[in-house]
Image 1 (cartoon, each protein chain N blue to C red):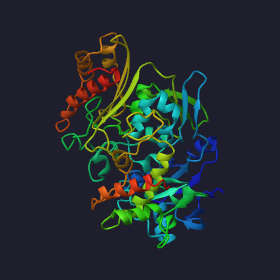
Image 2: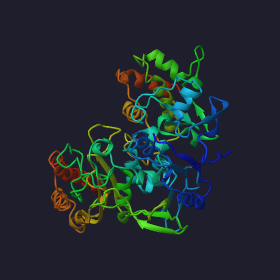
Image 3: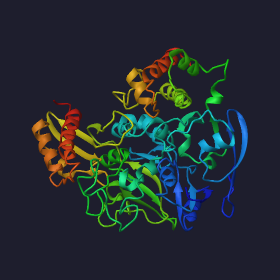
Image 4: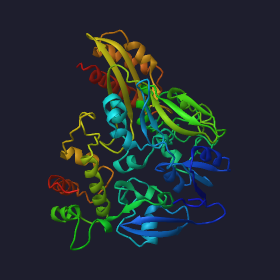
Length: 327
Length: 181
């Protein structure tokens, strides 16, 4: 690990101000950042510890929504009674990720910002446009079984590893930020993560020095919420494909549906195509399959990951059937 | 108590509570909590396996919650209350979880055992607090039935390469059913 200096931020304003230092980076739970620092993939020269800032609480919003502080741990959120009863898909997604020990440390803000687990990103002798911009992508033409099938580019086919963010995409969460100039702003989760394009090293719309302070969940949407994750091990493994679905039915007709995929793209993948194919139609397997075809119409396999296209379709059908309580 | 900024210095000073004793340490800020425990406090019961949060051998309890001590910096734990395997029990006065691992033969080589035991103690506290898991059918339910599937899911962050899993599950179940912490 490269040497760095360390400071503990005592208040939010001081935290963002401290980021003016060259090579500065925030640290909160540290479960992803320290892993990458040990491998010297991340090399901050100054760490600003924001873990003790007053953003740990989960609070009711006046409109019936919930605000989750950025420093709340993944465990705190997954176990929260309000999250479990009103936003079950979020609790399920969090519990499908990592291990008990990691969830006890990992923060909500850090979860949104975690880096890909592409093996070529981790292997410092391989070409990787995300780790070393301009060097190339070893995953294209390489061992790419776990890689993206939607929204990828010729620069990068990595996936975003978060389960939590997939549920938040379906819940239409808003991310609250505090900028280096002390200005606050809010970004919809659908606008927060970027597609790789030709700059895969820029993963979000965060400005330099900007800090996540919280995530706001709008009031509970109508319908059943289900998160389904398909992976190579039964536990403690990243998704090959995951689906967050929220489905409301009225006498056998789908009155509202929201669909987001994980493990398929550089960001949580909300599928408006699937949602359009579901709304107003009968809750049947044929309709679910048509939605799955619509969701994957633009999917592209890279060889080893070709199977993920069909896997994503089937996973969506199964998740919708569970959420709509049919089949 | 706040740690002074390390700017201009190579070390940071922290005060932490380890197994009930207050310890003062002067550390390179790169020092993981795991290395602080093992190399600076010579508490070698906590094991270094992968050093990347994948194996769970380094599990300790911080403020009663289980975490991977390899994936956190010691300087971030000023004022925290840390319990390691040495603090849970001692020869002749074993913690119920330690006694259950002996009784059920919940290990072979023993390298993962301190992490398994600390993790199991933290895990049962989570169950007692009503936390759901990936194995819980309805996350909104208030009652958690601690089935073997629940124990296995909740302990999946601890790898045992000797594959003593069936006996580890039995040991954890014994303690859970005995009503011990």
